[in-house]
Structure formats: structure tokens, C-alpha cells
Amino acid sequence: MSDQTSSVGDPSLRDLLRERAFVMMWSARLLGNIATQVESIALGWHVYAVARLTGTIAQGAFAVGMLGLAQFLPMFALALLAGETADRADRRAIMIICLAVEFVSAAAFAALAHWQVDDLWPIYALAAVFGAARAFFAPASSALAPTLVPRALLPRAVAMNSVSWQLASVVGPAIGGILVAASSATAFGVAAAMFLLATAGLFTFASPPQLGAQGASRVTQIREGLHYLWTNKIVLGAISLDLFAVLLGGATALLPVFARDILQVGSEGFGILRAAPAVGGVTLAAILATYPIKRQAGVKMLLGVAGFGACTVVFALSRSLWLSAAALALLGAADMISVFVRQTLVQLATPNEMRGRVGAVSYLFIGASNELGEFESGVVGRLLGPVAATLFGGIAAIGVTGLWAVIFPDLRKADGLD
Image 1 (cartoon, rainbow, N blue to C red):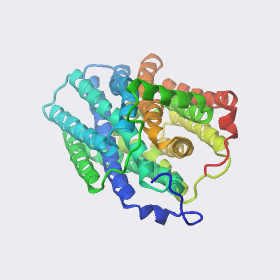
Image 2: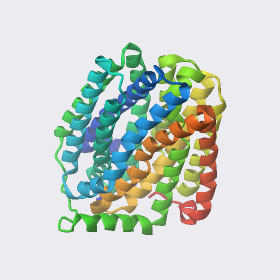
Image 3: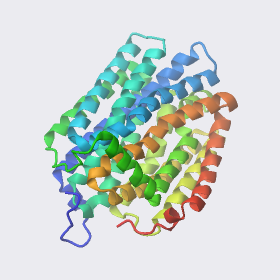
């Protein structure tokens, strides 16, 4: 349905909500995203607590960073194959399988926490399985969404998908913080139940027709996707800018360290800090769903990434819970500008038969870079300390923004998102 044209001038958010299949998929993704956030909260807190039983603050930060690496490696290894699979196979079926794997992983985490297994290697192994499932889930879901709405509704659908993620990032950490205060096993168990419900939600609508290049070889399809990305400098610039911003400015990666040993606010404060970026993000995403960016998109994206870096610097220097939370909220709002522009550009400019491959590379650059950013923050945190590492990341993100404005002039000059 993505190539349909609305018969009315400018479709509204109400028109989008009439698309039942999209609403059902959006709801399932929302529940799955909340489960992912709850699991992320529990994992970060649990791994840091286990590492601190016998190690220093720096060693605990490194252990959290290794958790990010364990998830990133399978994402990196499987990204291109996952994208090609999303263009060849039933995207809804791929999402169902991935959510089922995530359910099993969360249940296994709950068992490890319940039996108080203090070895980190089984946690890292399960995190790798979870990362592999996310590698296939991301391109399938991003490629399926545009086929469920008319093309005229695509910018609003992109904003609503961002609302889903950001809303989950608000609700998930809040729920996760409460559950972790009870026990990590409880948090993992609730996440597992949410994954199961999200899986059931995907059975409520049928898969739309898919017209991918079914006869081409896997290698040929992967090469086509990479060639498209390399030749489209606006899309390449937008994706790579987000990559380096997230990789360098990963303040959230060290939140367990800040909450427990720097701000000393415990698991409840950790939940507040973890939710703060999404409070700002979901607020702006809701605004963008109603009033999408229509002009000077490239400049606004660059300003958003620069603001992301500046807020990271403020967070690194803060010693107040509420100042830190405010900085993270503004960080989330600034990041949402970049996310909205990038996702809209990629979805509008990419043919449906190539969306899986392009979405896989985009997710590898953006989504998986969160985990790689956690590893980078953990390593630098061990070398420089968590405060210096976060400060360095924020300053570097600002520098990258200026560099990309010069390297990718087409991105800086990008205007309309229609």
C-alpha cells in the first residue's frame, strides 16, 4: 500500500489511525519495545551488581560495556543477511519468530537471576542470542510498516513509530526500575510475558503482498542494497551522522555507574535517569506526528545532533539528579529531530523491494551502534573514568556534526520531507 496516493490533500493523524493493520503492528511493536527496555534496565543493573561483588567501579563499567559488545557482534555479523531475508521472506513471520526468541531469552535471564548465577559468561551468551533476534527483527519491522499505509501517510507513520519507541523508553525504564527494586528475576519475567503478548498481536492481521527480487541471489541483493546506500549521499550522510553521534555520545550506557556510584540515587533514581531521554523524545515525537518537519530538514537534523552532544556534556558535569534528568530529557528531544529526519528520508527514498536491505544497514549504523557505543563507553570509562568518558563523548559528537556538515553538503541542503 506504500505507493498509494491519498485522495485528500494533506492526510491527518486520524487517517493514519484508521489503518487497522498498521495500528495492530504499532501496538505489538510498542509492547515489544517496552519489554526490551525492561530487559535492558534489568540487564545493566544485574551485570553491574554482579561485577561489583568482586571488582571496582571501573571494572563494573567495563562489564556493562562488554554486555553491549555481546549484543553488537551478532547484529553486525547478521545485518546484511537479515536485510536480504526481509526483502525475500514474509516480514511479519520474521517478526513473530524474532519475538519468540526474545521471549525465550528473557525467560532464561529470569532463571539465571532467580538461581543467583554469578558468572557473567552465560549472561553474555544469552545477550548475543537476543542481539541476533534483534538483527532480524529490525529490518523486517521497518520494511513492513510502510507497506501498511498509503504513501501520503508515511511521514506521520514514521513519527508514530518513533513515538512507539520513545513511549516504550519512558514506560519501560519506569517499570524496569520498580521491578528491579524487587528483583532482577521479576523484571526479566515480566519482560518475557510482554514479548509473548507482542507475538500474539502480530497474528491479528495478514501479511501484505511482497514484490521483492525473488529470483536474484542473496549476494546480488545485498550488493544492490549497499550500492544504493553508497550512491545516495543524503541517506548515507544521515545514517552515518547518527552512527557517530550515538557511538560517541552514549551517556545512557554508563547510567548504572552514575546512578549507583556518582549521583548515588539507587535503582529508583536509575529508573528516572533511564526514562528521562525518552520523556523528551516522546514529547517531541508526538509534536512531529501532528506537525511534521517540512522544510530545512538537513539543517534541523544537524542542529539536533549538536544539541545531543551539548546535553551529554551537561549530564557529564552534573551532580544533581534533577539537573541530570533534565539534561537527558533535552538530549532525547534533540535526538528525536535526527531520528525523524533520517527515518523519513530513508523510507521515502527507498523502493519497497529494497527496504529490508537498506533498513538492515540503517539499523546496523543506528540501532546496533547503541550496543557498540556501550562497549566504547565501557572501555573509555575504564581508562578515563565514567565522567571523563561521557564528557569526551559529548564534545566529540559536537565535533562530528560540524565535520559532517562539510563532508555531506547535500545533507545540509536537504529541504523538504514530502
